[in-house]
Amino acid sequence: ANGERIKLNAKMHMLFEVQDLAVASPATVSRCGMVYVDPRDIGWQPFLWKWLNSRENEVEREVIHALCDKYLEPCLDFVVDGIVNRATMEMTEPLRQVTPMTSLALVEQFTKMLASMLTDERAIIDKALIEAACCLALTWSIGGALVQPARAKFDTFLKKLSGLPLTASETVSTGQLPSSTTLHDFTLDLDERRWQPWSTIVPHYVPPTDGKFSSIMVPTADTVRSTWLVDSIMSVCGQGRNCALLVGDSGTAKTTVAAKYLLSCDPATSTALTINFSSRTSSRNVQVAIEDVLEKRTKDTFGPPAGKKLLVYVDDLNMPTVDTYGTQQPVALLKLLIDRGYLYDRGKDLSIKHMKDMKFIAAMVPGRNEVDPRFVRLFNVFCIAFPPEASIKQIYTSILHTFFSTGAFNTSMQDRGFAERLTAAMFDVFNAVVTALPPTPAKFHYIFNMRDLSRVTEGVMLSTPDKMSECKHIVRVMRHEMYRVFYDRLVDDADKGFVGDKISKAIKASFSSEAEEALREPCLFGDLLNYHEVEEERSAGGGEEVRLYEDLQDFERFKPVLEGVLEKYNGVHKPMNLVLFDDCLGHLVRVHRLMRLPRGNALLVGVGGSGKQNAVMNL
Image (cartoon, one colour):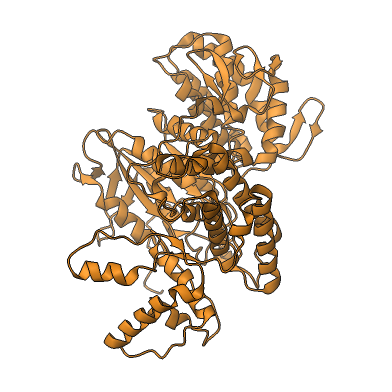
């Protein structure tokens, strides 16, 4: 006896529910009676029957029942098991999902998507309109977690199964289905009783009031659609758990969509909490973060302020470290909270704390740590596909065009075509870099994504009319920013030569008349030329003069400024005997640029004695 055993009397029994016996010892297996429950024994039909019986409109209930008989089983067979036709047993490969989903979870997601459209207020009984809503709900439930290539296959199968006529026009009335693209690209206007592309309801871009680049969000068909999906799940009342999980690669605007949705919620009826997971996040961190924003209602019941819902957004859900037994502790804690609605107090008595009125939105990048499928089933899962090239170009063109149009820039820069050419050049270089320079064990930091395009755009937006009066100056700034974002990350001459050549070709292709000025060497920009004047004025109590981002022209022009900074530093601290040769000056300017940017961060990588510490100390 080790003193830790639990003594059970004759009237006590213990029941364990586990997914598998991967970490069970032979002693556990031999002493416990094993009962294997096949998920197909019960199936998803009882849940569907229960949900149908909860629908109060009898006419609607009968129509939905007939449509479920028509669509659900064939669609589940096709997606989950790869059965094209059960009668002839025609088979294919099961469609790939971004994260594995069970048939029951897909059916539950279908009912929530359908309930969000067929509300009691609308009281829809028209069969054609209900079937259209059913097709859209199937698209974003059974087809919601499918990766991009699998979506086209499911769309073809669904349209064939429906037997409805296909129409290639932009707007399609109910009783028909659009054929120009997949149903994932269309929304259903229940008031007008028609299908229409998401692109037709995208609002105009409005710059953020605070002027911060990090606050910019350009609406696109993808962001409007993702916001609608989250809102559809969050708006369903009285039907189990309200949890949405967005799964997609970095740069697909998952966090941006969630943040925008949280900001759009009425503060009188909701409050928000954001939790960012990392490999070091513990279950205690998560519990403390949640308990800090909840109020005590009764002895053992907690919740947000009266009359409000707490919306919890969890970013990087699959980042926590997996322990010895395959468990992610923060995920296990959230599973208990979402599934059971309570947590245990971490004090000595381990009392139960019931937590009410909470909804969860989560996001993660596939391919990291595998998340417990029992936890994933609690969420409505949506695969957020990488936006098409047209959407990406629209985003950055809108940002740049608005920036140049609202400032006092030359009229030639205010033309939308100028912003489109800038975006095209940046995107050509980005595509070439992503394709030709993948990460390898020796170059693990070669990770390029949409954030790099944003960094280039943010750098271009440091331009001011005072210093950049002609188009060629802006093109030169763009070249500099692409060098800083892409070129400075490279480690060998072959990669640097490839990227430098791509940048030159992109500029010559889009800006032939400005190429000579833009490609002039050296290409260095900064706001340090008037550093001493600004500091003197600030010391004297003034502060009107500002430092503007400008072309530094050559090393000799700004070398005296840095020598003065070094002399000033040596007068206060232990002297540094530095020789400011050209390579050192270049590194100083590059690091200085990052430190001057909002949210600017730098990781200096180099062998010992290469001057990393001295470069930072001199800033």
